[in-house]
Amino acid sequence: MQGSPCTWHGAETGVEVPAGATVVRFRVPQGRFVHNRKVTSKDREKLGRELTRQSLGLKRKLKEGDAAGILVDIPAKLQRLFKAKGQDPIEAWLEVRLTDIS
Image (cartoon, rainbow, N blue to C red):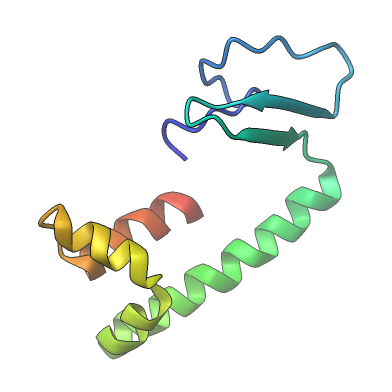
């Protein structure tokens, strides 16, 4: 995720990760706390299966031209945000999902 304050993915957080730490808690600019956990090999395998499932579902909807199915997947608040920014919700959502999956 671009701009994500993740200590293990090189984002600028100002948080020093203690050697050997598996969980780090820090405050983001919005004032909330974020907990990051370093992944394990089992996490990677689970994530790989989940991303494959998601990408196949997205591919199927695109192939079938299922715009309604794609719209159902987009949270209503996010659809409103896309529209307020003058973006097509489906195109913006596909960009977000493909970025998440890749």
